[in-house]
Length: 334
Length: 253
Image 1 (tube, each protein chain N blue to C red):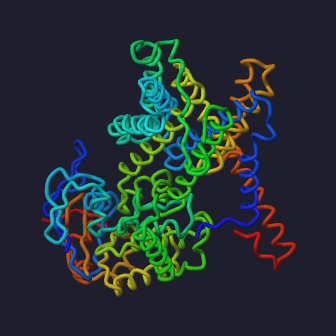
Image 2 (image 1 turned 180 degrees about the vertical axis):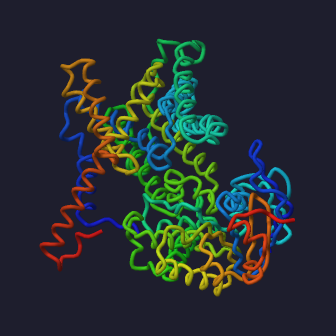
């Protein structure tokens, strides 16, 4: 029902292989760090895409839920709780707070949800900078331990004390999240998300509980953000209010929109491509934002499905051209 | 089967529907007609839970559904279409129908995430039922297309299909042939007849008198939110109150 053509599958395999072999051809520690961060951002942005892209609810608090995951892991592991327990618990806390926020706000339609989540995001950021007993205030929390090694029979153990170990952990979680999203989105259940985005009154009239659907999408997205945040804390060894800030939300937003809303690869592409672009434009300082602003507007107008959507359109054009030229070769068609 | 009992709907000062009672009987085609602004669409919105009545009650098989939310009404087997053709226009034709069938299944979050045996069965059932409905609508070969690629008549058919895919007891159609030419109207009329033949009760709102007279078993006539006549097409046609409502003129006591 939802199959992809062979060359798309090959492309994904090549990207996967490149990701798995990354530590061998990126020796530079700084760039490796940026790539690992991109993996974490890709996870969080994928969660945002579930809410924003597939379900059409403009959430502007995603950075806050990322921060809850980060602070959750920081506080719990500093208190002696093992990372492997702290991580899921932190993500669940983010999901639960998402539920509390979603319950009253998702009843409304349109801009109210965006406004409330924006306010909530700013509040979380302010609280994280001022609740000194819990969060360490503006200095944040230092000395967060790395995840403890996982023992493997006959093999020894998998350690996470090196950057490489953390990279593979992040990559594994990204793949797991994408796999889960793939199952959810490309199914009848996933169609209900898109039904809510596309035509809420009609969805309602064909027996879909639109409120519950939005809530499930939002809570799941917040859980994913918390997961990414928790790994961020363990990887950086420190968290500060900027890990819960609204600037982070807008970074995720840019990743999702430029990468491609409502496509699974979009946020991942965005999370990798944009930081690289940022690095290239380092010499422009804060004027970079001017360029990004213009880029964002152009993409929204001309490529509503972002970079990935643009590539897909190109792919379809090529397929149509091949169909015309070699009518008997059928495998290029959808 | 479905009973509307002295339902009134006020919008601030305006009375849209006043003390309206009527019944939809199993297996029939009932038409609700009336001049513009007579409150026909409001009646549908009240039945399906889009609007809450100011007073009065609505029953389906003696079950009170007054004030239920639209998705709850839908899961009692009452489907509807909208006056302006309402579709999921960002999605494919087949997706539109599968969404319409979803409430009949257990295709929720956990079943989907873990691909349980139940998920497999229901996902396949949904696809099959959607294809069946497309066959019935005569749209089977367009299943993979996106909605904007369909003609207006095909879109009207699809809108009926979305409501029909879940095998409702009652199908409420709000101007199913609005904006169509005669030939297309005939085809949609034929479709509605076939819907009834396969056992679904139909209630529709229409403007095209000629079509209604040939299609409906019974007619309810509204004017200014009140029922002014009810009965078989022939009776209604000769009703003095109906003639006056449609042709204008003074109401004689």
